Length: 70
Image (cartoon, helix red, strand yellow):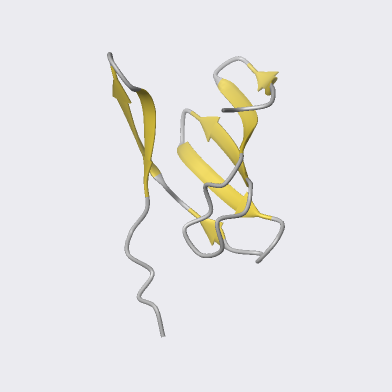
């Protein structure tokens, strides 16, 4: 599902996750570091702080706080 993982430094990596933006279903740019995860959607410009959960059977899951649709 991801296109490429870019290692920025020890413990920090970036990747693009297609169809994952909780607002518009666009591609998310995701940065994972020791400080946590941050996301950015270039389509709708949403910036987020997802929680990551690693599952042995399903890989990594992103969890976003409910954005509250208008």
